[in-house]
Length: 214
Image (cartoon, rainbow, N blue to C red):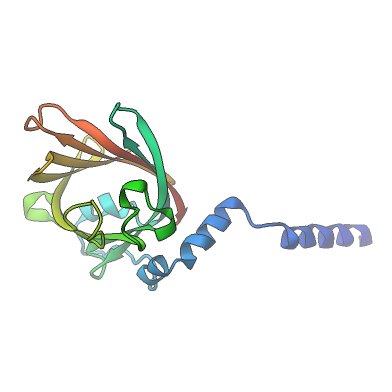
């Protein structure tokens, strides 16, 4: 009995003294970032029982994610970029989904190096039942970089298990943003452009997100 108690005490002590797991370190670091901490100051929220059932389409992403990003080069190869953090929550009393993309000033990709501050992009997403689609409005603090416009809108629909966001023609043609391969702990994202009215599409950026918290 005495030896069992000693063994239990040693196990407990080793757990207390062992270093935090990499996942735990990543979550602690993410939650220490002021924009993330402020965005999630009231938690992740919850779906309103009276909200459209489709609100769960983006609602499945509610949580905090570490995101690895790749961008297409001139030769068509994908080049790893600096990782980011992506926080999602229910908003507007559970009738909408809001998100915040965060990239720290010391971790900006080269094409944004002149920004000189943390890069933040936030969006609100509401499902319009009568239209059978989502409306998405976003804005960012990227003014002064080469990112171009810092506000925009999309519509989105669930198509064959993928959430497809579409926008009107811009200076680079048509754009679509696709969320896919959903699981409890990961999803994929990509940004495509078309310069022939949607006949063909080219992926210019893609991401893989891994859940830190929900």
